Length: 597
Image 1 (tube, rainbow, N blue to C red):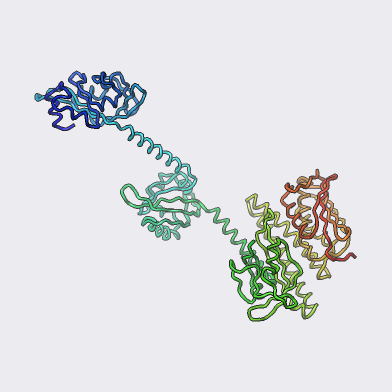
Image 2 (image 1 turned 30 degrees about the vertical axis):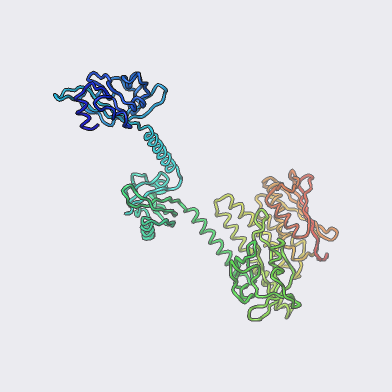
């Protein structure tokens, strides 16, 4: 209230509001009331009456019988109302917040200022009371406060470290997850320099990136920290610039502990390196593609046959310069064995081709493209082995020596791969990984067993069925715990080498399922294996003493059944299950031209 109004009011302690110029008070957006020395209200403008919900007849009452609260929600008595307090104390009461509950039940927040009025002799003659509606402002404050509390709760319950770092590296704020990652309480780290916990060899990188963020960049980087318990942890941080209230720039960062992810990445890199070293050690040319036929890996032997270095991620299906059939006719790219294997999702065998290198040299080869499928049977790529058969054209003996050496190397490398898988299975702690590695080890063991049977065969194109079945069963039995017996009844005969690997995997899967499900994990029991000649093919049967099951198209007793079905189709055969005293799993397949003793 202005000094002129104070003087004017003092000269007329009981004023007529529409006399002496008081009409001005009816047009201001602030409620105003005037009372005399006894607290009797002598004037209320329309804004004050409207704020308090008064009718014109009640203009002499102002708060009247209305309920008035302080800002903490405490109900005020009549003596505690701002005008009464001022009249009693003779001092101004400015910027006091009250809450008025009107007769309609609505509550409004008012910011009040009450000034005492004195006459020329200094005697207190009344008071001027002003009211300003701040309800909307209070709602905004409450909303902002609630939002702030919500945001703080989100920050504190987030499992990632969230922190604010000043430009000089001082840690200004950090949530509970960050303190847990550091192994320190907030009192031990807040207001300290974060460089103290960054590993020494990473501090220069951290300072450089921090400075860049404080200059306005958004960055992501990794670094090591030394936690309070002495452990080294690998962190990944996502940082953005933050403007502080004083206008300075700081770093707002979300940091997560990626120590376990880094360990897994290193293990995966080591596994890939071991596999690549293994493939590089093979004397045969080997390369792989993805499901679209793009080359993903090649060893040096394949580059030597092609006479060029394949472009990983660019070249398609085959690494060779040009392909011809033995009669000299060219082979279009879409008809090369690798492209056919991917298109038809099947292995291609027995096709002899001639590779023409860029220098014009031609090399006769036999490719062995094989689809690669995931656990669900979905095609994810293919692997191709190119066998150079140049020397076979010169002499049958030299060809035999080459195949013997290839078989020997493959056998040793399969055994090495089997050992690596078993070692990984023993060392890993992840249950899912252990299960995958165990299945892979069993399957590689079955392939290795079949390879040993092939290597010991006198024939270069076929193998003895009885020796083959015994070798695979013996390899599988070594993986079974307890006293599980396998009774074998295999008719003598010879079968083409082309079906050895699929047949070995089928027999291994059937034996594994019989132990897991037929014997229900018991450490003793008997499994019967039969391989008999039937019509123009063979029938392989594996029988356990369990409860049996029905084979449904959409249901899978175990993940291996899908593999068995696929391999049976690869052999041109059929897979079925019969129920008797137990489950009798039967795979019938043609002999593909092999002879019987």
